[in-house]
Length: 232
Image 1 (cartoon, rainbow, N blue to C red):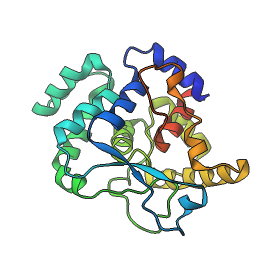
Image 2 (tube, rainbow, N blue to C red):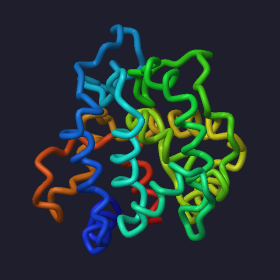
Image 3 (cartoon, one colour):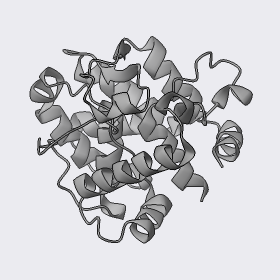
Image 4 (cartoon, rainbow, N blue to C red):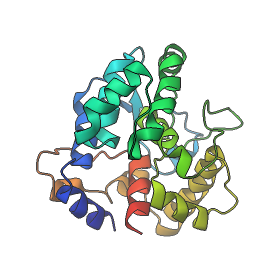
């Protein structure tokens, strides 16, 4: 299914997988770090040796530019940027992006100073995830995309179709934070059933087959699950 997702993504003029990998590797916004977790963390049980995490103190404008490369039709970039700057409404699929992004901008100093270096697989206890109390539905698509962009190894993005499939598989996950916790449980069960490492799970997604400019297969965990639901 992941191969199929990459095949069709290559046919799309936006080349989203290519833009995602450019963002992770070249943007200066993210870094691939050695797993910082203690030996007792859940991720260590599955051979975790690195995390993909956001750097501190990046600018909002830099983040916005790469966010749009990953999640917004490039034909709409100028219109969307102008709407964000003027806080003006626009029509079309990106209409709901404007108010969400303005809230992100308003809280940017807090967001960029608080970095969660954990992955979806890690132990989280009862720690709060800021901004994840929203309901999973078609109105919160860009909420999920911003969360996935800011924390690519921890959160997932969804679109209009995939959120319906997520509701089908996780009917009790009304809130986004509940959805992530339940997907985490299924990920652990899958790794246990397959007797696999998390590194092997990451390699399920290999966009290099269709995107020759991509040199790394270090795909964020959230992106893999996002792609699975895009192709179901």
